Image (cartoon, rainbow, N blue to C red):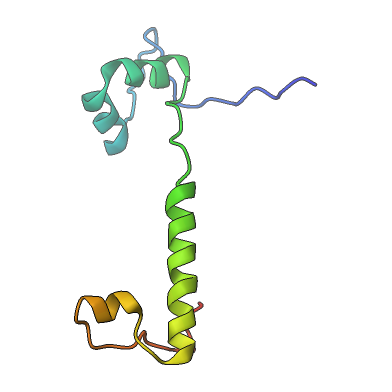
Length: 97
């Protein structure tokens, strides 16, 4: 199965006499890495994307679920007790939103 070619816009053409607009983020990219900037604006090759934050999301999900348990019981989490935090996880009807 053939993949569709991604249409690249706003590539720099050295033979053009038109002005070449750049955003502030593209200028920042040039300052960070002129080679990456060249690949992006001249050849249309994007920078590699960063990997997803799957570990961060998993830890976040587990901590929220754990605190939800103590929130429904109306008692402080053991870590809160350990560090002398005299509080109960707050329950609010819009918390899941």
